[in-house]
Length: 147
Length: 143
Image 1 (cartoon, rainbow over the protein chains, first blue to last red):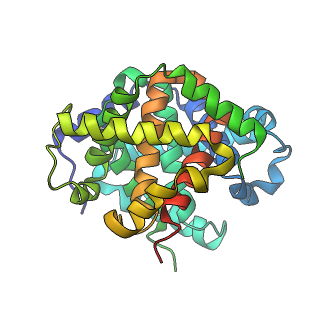
Image 2: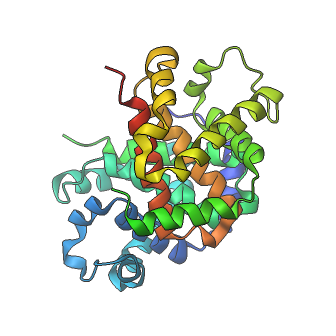
């Protein structure tokens, strides 16, 4: 089981309290689709993804980004039971959505860059390290039920 | 593939950093060692504490090399040829590209904390592509 130090928990929950979930979620998902365009394959039904501007403004992208980051936030409240928390979502991403887990790693790294840009003053090396660990653990949990 | 627009964005972004090469390099390296401890295995001979002379010196070197690459975006292979040899035959950072991905992530975080919202999705995309291209050139001669 993943061990979290008190300092890590503090850095994670401390920053999370400041995060504007709707904005950062939308931004993170949009950037995934912009920086790694092949990820658009999972969102063909979302409408206009023809340019960075279109993607950033796309209401379905924004809504879905918020949904994803909200779920992330729930996991952060349950750092000690993340695998269990994501078990159902893991099965969904495998059986229904057919998403290669490599994409979870990509989204995690993108989220980190968004947090760094939006919360620069808080994003010390120690803070980044704690968050890199969170995104790695979340990605792992989401991949855990794949078969 | 780096488009003309990408190249412009990269050069503009680099210019904004105003020659803070040593600081950016040192911070990037320190973040890399802190978030990805396995990267420390390549520096057993270094003092890895924050702000150490060795981290500052090495960070400056890395950033200078990237700056040179940015001046030669149309011919990265040639501009980075010496470094490509060094990484393939001497340093042998393993697996090719993987540790360099960590460095890329940490450099981007460093840039994002300095530029804030100016590190737009378009800039993010261009820089990520550039660093991937650099890593690919450095890994070219591995085998």
